[in-house]
Amino acid sequence: MPEDKFVQLNGLRLHYRDFGSEGSPALLFMHGLTGNAHCFDHVAPEFVATHHVLALDFRGHGDSEWHSDGDYAFQRQLSDTIAFLEALGVSKVSLIGSSLGGAVAMVLGAIKPDLVERIVLNDIGPEINLPEPDEAAEALNLLEQQFTDATEALEYYRRCYPPARILPDTVAIEFVRNSLRVTEGGSLRWKADPRVQAVAPTSSTSASSPGMWPLFDAVRAPILVIRGAESETLLTSTVAKMVSRRSGVSAVEVPGVGHTPWLSEPTALAALREFLR
Image (cartoon, rainbow, N blue to C red; front, side, top):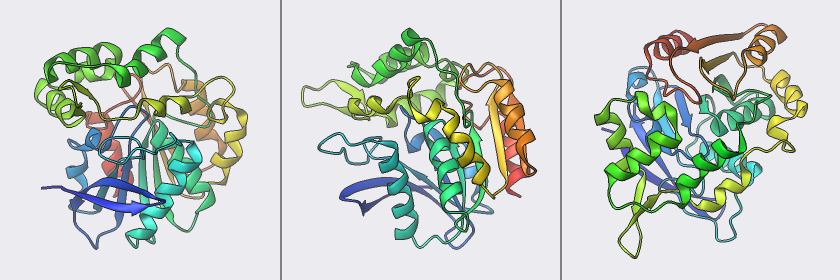
């Protein structure tokens, strides 16, 4: 059974899930902007036979502490991740990052080449195609909503986040229950500081600019790119460009899902097992 643990880093108390096998090669899962460590509860156990599997809640997400001034800049998430690995004494790590987590993984691989062994980029790359403003707003509004129970929250989550519709009901409701907190008024809200949405990509941010390509090119570790076949965020042309840039970059497309795959889909899981073997 995974353990919920906490560590004090950069002035904040951060939460992570430890799925076990300490002493084995480290494998760190990192979630997206509205996600948390529980996103990987149904896939992380698949790798405990070969890896020490961890899943981190970024600051302001899940059960990690919120920053008093709402400082959730990308550089802070990156700094926290480095400090987290140092605190756990991890000298080599493979990274699996979904969306925001993938961006952190990519930059970490570029600036810490001796630390990062392998990288999985889950529906994210050096260029992203921005969603329509209305779609983006609806997804981020999840952080502002109040719910009466987990069922209502799941209905909203599936409406604003289409990949959640393919999850089995038992898996989906368990994830949502673990992603809700009780407010002082007794209602339920998503476990994330609404201020994290300030770092959501826009047309002027580095996440969508050509400036990310040099960082991608600087990564020495093997890279597996996983793309949701229905994703409007990571385009097939971007994936093709990533694969053609250098050797050691492979890609797989997961049918029937958009941004982002859960990684438990048969296609994704098979690719992960092969890549991390």
